[in-house]
Length: 253
Ligand SMILES: Nc1ncnc2c1ncn2[C@@H]1O[C@H](COP(=O)(O)OP(=O)(O)OP(=O)(O)O)[C@@H](O)[C@H]1O
Image (cartoon, rainbow, N blue to C red; front, side, top):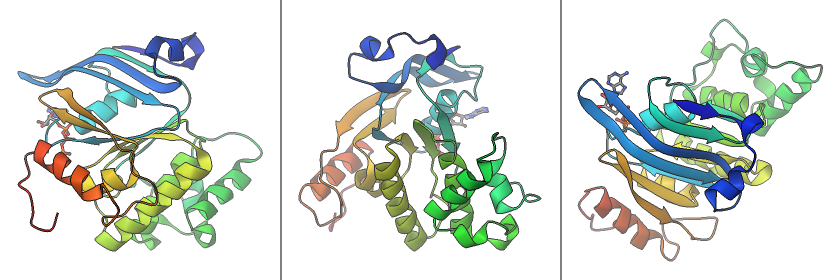
């Protein structure tokens, strides 16, 4: 698969025709044996844009995210990224033998790494836990560390694969609010893989539905922030997305 980065991109923005882009993917195809999971996916994420990727289980969301992250050498198609990319997975993937700050700083270089690490941990509300071991943290705190580890790299694009999927409902709401705050403060773009229509509606500027190996719908979300279920337009869009995902309408939805 052809993967290009900013060093060899001359005019990515002109190429996309939709303003500044952090990633452009064209013609992505991925098969596993006889199964075709992605069958010609085209995708653009604009600078600072938050795009949610919805789709039923097994539709290929994680496969697509791994390709965009450069973690899948077997896929066909082309991915061009323009800027730094960081990834947050559903599992925190912290190294248990490294303290929290060392996990965040992993792979970074420079005299200012301790300060940057401390600042990133403070931003996710863990200023007091820099010396802790991962085993001493709750699931939500561990995922905050994973977010700090991404943030400290000052990404232009954050790839998030069900980042809050393993958390309880309350922690999940807090993490969604955290992501929204960080996004406003830092201006990164994000591609958020999620099962959760509400999460997509709370956070995204645009929602893509992956179905049958292609982007079957591209739905702009123009609702004002802060978003909530009882705000105008929310439940209508929610119903539309659920119907598109094949979920029957619920009485209070
Ligand atoms: N390494 C692999 N080897 C074989 N099949 C795979 C591999 N990775 C993914 N698949 C298959 O590709 C399909 C898409 O998987 P993927 O994890 O991308 O879906 P998903 O939309 O992220 O699903 P979920 O929402 O359940 O996480 C599934 O049928 C899965 O079994």
